[in-house]
Length: 266
Ligand code: NAP
Image 1 (spheres, rainbow, N blue to C red):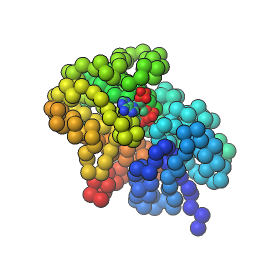
Image 2: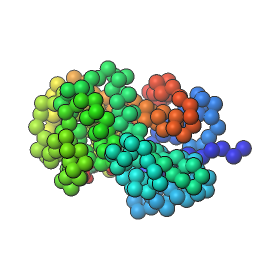
Image 3: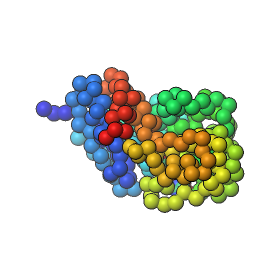
Image 4: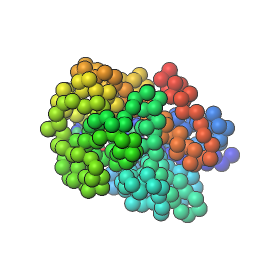
């Protein structure tokens, strides 16, 4: 039988749990599909994505560092992708591609699951890449007061031009006293250190977009050691944003909580 084919494209991508998640969604909803991983070279996103879809692929999940490039490449995109300039899910219809950004929805749904309120809260976001552009609009729409800190200045300047309501500062100069700290850097993917003043964690709820099935990441560990009131990894966000993409691709809604619990147990 010819199965509908999907894949996650990124670099690196070996760590991605997306194949497991989407195959579980497919089992839950009786959908026949195959989902794989594609590691594209840094200058190879466009040709590899085009090739996969031209050979019959139905859709792609897009992960770091290709979300901005994916937005520029697709034929059309939804409002979240346009607002963020970043695409994390692509669907193909005939010869045409459409890009979506489900990262913000995924994060907000995980905050609801955790019972974390963000309206009126002072939220520090670390990093200024594709994931951050996807979550800023939804966080502002929920009434959080956002500061974004990044290692290099260029991305902060671009972000501030796009979202004038945020404050920005260099990562090395971030002071303490936050209600929430969100790590959206890819430091762990590059096996590099995230150098931040540990005071930022004190009495804050801390959320790492990076994830691991056993609930701990370097950032989560560090936050717990330095006085965070709670610290969580991003597995919930991953599952919720994937459920949203799966719904867009297949027209059926899977049960993300069941999949999240399964991943934690596995
Ligand atoms: P990206 O576009 O490549 O951006 C990476 C960001 O991380 C940049 O701001 C970069 O700063 C910063 N960075 C990298 N290494 C650093 C270090 N050692 N110290 C300080 N900053 C560092 O990546 P992305 O797409 O935004 O993804 C970011 C992370 O979010 C990834 O880990 C990804 O897996 C995760 N993510 C998770 C979910 C989920 O569902 N849980 C969804 C989306 C993304 P410079 O500008 O200075 O280089």
